[in-house]
Image (cartoon, rainbow, N blue to C red; front, side, top):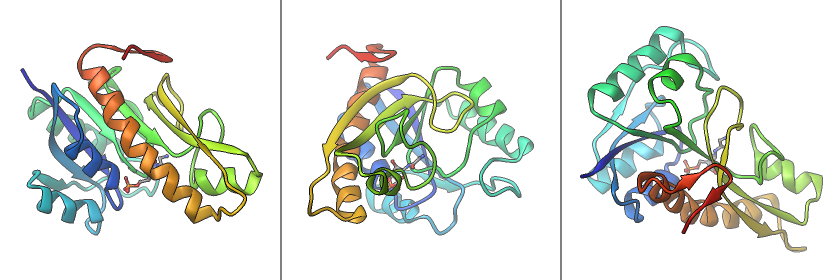
Length: 197
Ligand code: GAR
């Protein structure tokens, strides 16, 4: 039995692609939903043969309108989606989606949370001067990049790094750990702060 996954993305979609191409069994990416008609992820979905859809997110910039979030949730429930993966969705999720998918929304973030939540986490870490950066997959609660951690991966900061070279190495690790965490969840083996491999 497959577990239907919806990926929600606003941007380039490389993590979406990693989830489609990676081993997430018994989970399978069923649909890409985006709040951005220009998202590169839409083009990737067409190339990968994954159904994709733009849905209006409401008039706000960093969150959904309440009615719109209800409509997104209704749409996903109606499709039989059982796991929602945020992959560069630049919007905070509040009531309706969280209520519809309790403990079933995951996010990837390009820092070792709880350090550097929010925008440009890679730039925040680089500018702070950390020696070890990284990425985190976590369950989503009502906060910004908060919620129980599933997997983390460290990435060494090199003397020669720029913000962008560091971000590129972190992104590669993101692609690896996101499908691992999704697979663990779908097999019922992702537990808070610990993944049984
Ligand atoms: C990724 O680095 C992801 O971790 C980050 O946006 C990028 C999306 O890239 N997400 C956040 O910062 C969420 N707080 P992608 O569209 O190529 O997957």
